[in-house]
Length: 246
Image (tube, rainbow, N blue to C red; front, side, top):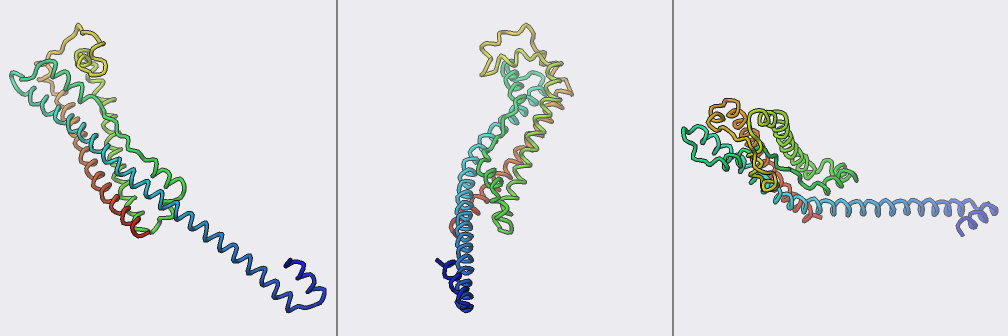
């Protein structure tokens, strides 16, 4: 209809009417674009807010994983302390089976695998980029650095176990008696014909080094994990405040 009117005004050389109709068309297109941009921005804000809510819930669930992982690490540290104390004694107060079980436990690497689906979605959809300059983005960055510290300690512990501790145990320790104490395969592995000479192990500086290093790397992981848990709590609070302001 507008186009037909413009053509009629041009034929009639009514330039004022042509200008008015042209302005109406341009203004209508401009308003349409602005409304579309506003709707898109509103949809992006709604998506971002929902993603941050999901991230907060994910963080709350991860704290339970952190607590369980920490408890397992502390148990390993306790095993190291008990073993080193027993090996220092002239007559160890531990039964052979208990020594085997504790050696097996400190050789395990507990899995650290927090859920990061909501964070990955924030990153993949550009949500973190849209938060640039916001205090909440700075808080997420601090949290990510704390997470990286735990992952680094986890990787260090895994490498030490695989590259140093396992080769040592395969050469100097009868592993069969240890595996007999496993709650997973202990009943099916059978009885080993080889046994460990714990007096010889007690006098081994190399074994003491292995135990001491294991204690150190595990303690470092616990320290990093405590920092991560504290940052997680603070980030959960920051996300809650963000939601309250929206």
